[in-house]
Length: 173
Image (cartoon, rainbow, N blue to C red):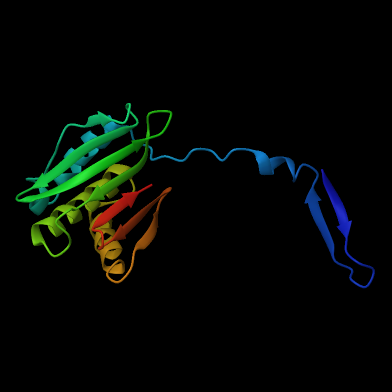
């Protein structure tokens, strides 16, 4: 039910405010997460890394549970490059945040290629039905070009992807 609120006499503006407006403020925000478990992440990344010839040799290690099972640690290796992958898990076992870090930095060409492959594969893993290989390639290039001078965050369907060169990392949340 809406209660009309009338502004001062000189003003004829009327505001409609829901009766339970104050009640909703104290409710806890729903925990956000990716629609992936560590198992579906592993399977999706493995499948989609093979879609691009330059990425087909990439290998994602089996996840190692750390921090009392709240975090999964993995590495993605491609040639001489290695990307650390840290998956923060929500209470329901789904991934709340996926962080990809390249410790060798963006000046290392192999590291850049591994990060690009990771970006492409995570986009395809999150949205395999809606994000075509061509769209994922274009979006991959866009998020990294946009991060050239400062961190860049892009909405990606129901999630967000943040990329930055210093430190060289990508966060998917």
